[in-house]
View 1 (cartoon, one colour):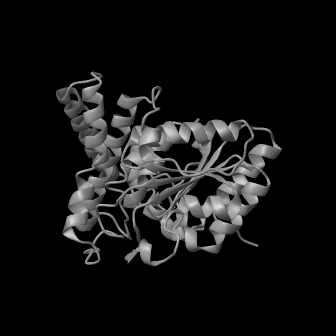
View 2: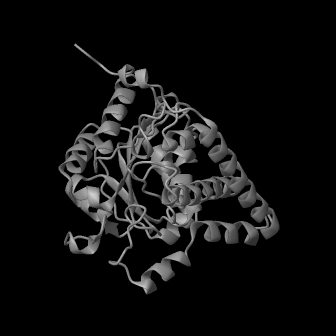
Length: 334
């Protein structure tokens, strides 16, 4: 087990020489287009149930997924659209699932908070806070026992760190040196509560190091390249058999806990400050500065992302609802 200190986000950002910046930009743009459309569709009553968007947090999903293999495991949360898209889920099937249509990833039965695609390692989103964390510990254990060389990643918010499932799972991963990556998206709020009021030790990375001797780093979650660099290093450690890693990505959700939450608990100054660190803008500025693409070329990519999501929405609208007998399929009975 490795004891280490947290790293400054600028240190992680200094090392992404191999980061596929243009690919990262394309992924961030796709997630942004998807979430923007979903927010509007839910507002207009076309998408049923509850919806939790990741607008403002897209850089974390893109950076992490770009460091993974297709067969690596991933478990996510109620705010998991971006993670699932970045891992490679079909865009049309993802949108159809949110519409509750039979062409969805779960044939319309899971909806926004239960999307999954085991074919590409996506063990699923989960409406229970912290519930995906022990799932990836089990996946990491199976990978180690079967010598599969697969890494398992769990996304969760900083609020989940106060759940018992986090501590039990991290402790097991530590003592068994499992290839598990605990990816904490620290967006400063646990539902409607300022996370700084919930614990004496604000840093999730420091709590993990001190409590369990797990290698942990803190990174700028709005810099997709920095997230990619940190995740690449974590994946390499896991594949070398050096045990689990926790990455605390500091980010911010633009919208409320759920769509429709007016966010009276946030100040306008705070929201403006974080919007100025828009992951799409941060990444685009870097790409232009390094001469990898022009602003006009990046704008074209973002327009293409919008068009791709418009196509997915049209396909979802045209798809059928599940037939009544579907209720009796894919269930267990005595």
